[in-house]
Length: 274
Image 1 (cartoon, rainbow, N blue to C red):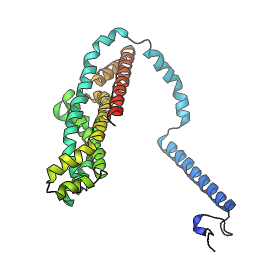
Image 2 (image 1 turned 180 degrees about the horizontal axis):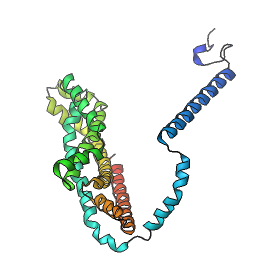
Image 3 (image 1 turned 60 degrees about the vertical axis):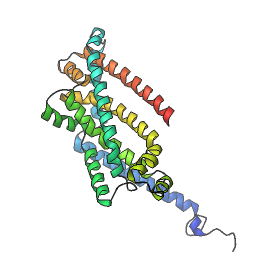
Image 4 (image 1 turned 135 degrees about the vertical axis):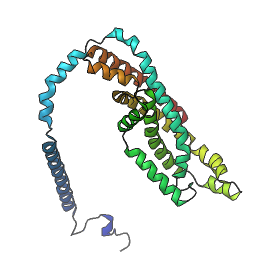
């Protein structure tokens, strides 16, 4: 009859009553929950780690916290140079990666790449870059160039390039194709399509992604210092190694304040351009 809903629309049928569907959903959720619990128990047993270990380690946590306070406020003056080096490392790495990611992301975009071979090869290179952790990159470059900020910068460039190129390539593939087709129809070449059709559409997102990666690089450069790749992280690692916890706490406070300020400024800039 006209107006009668079909069984495919999820209405009541003798073979599929609402109570039965609710019971089936309940059993599915119970099954998923049981699987998650079993996986957690298995992994905890395999890794010999559980909430019991956390509870047993709490006394050591409080002992460490007690040793971190009070901070050595007089050590603050010696950390500004390394903090400045950390920020400069992030600036250089983000700038270089931001420039290099433009041609790479264009070749990794299906609607811009000259041919399928270049598109597939570039995508694979991007995938490889993203699979290498930044800490491993730092270890490799420290082995090549020695201890210092340059090794950290090189590691951050490769690390940033993988992130920026992927984000930008996905943005390019999602742009409006009508301007591109109009430029091609009027006789425009590939460079003109990129300059007048692609770049105006992706510029706000490109700026936002670059600022976001800069924030990541500031935090990542702190960790890279632990393997000798320069920056304030190297100073923090030295303080912890010599059990100078008051100095370490002072460095942690300075890092926290610097990261909060950088993220606030970057967030405000992104709000203005988006």
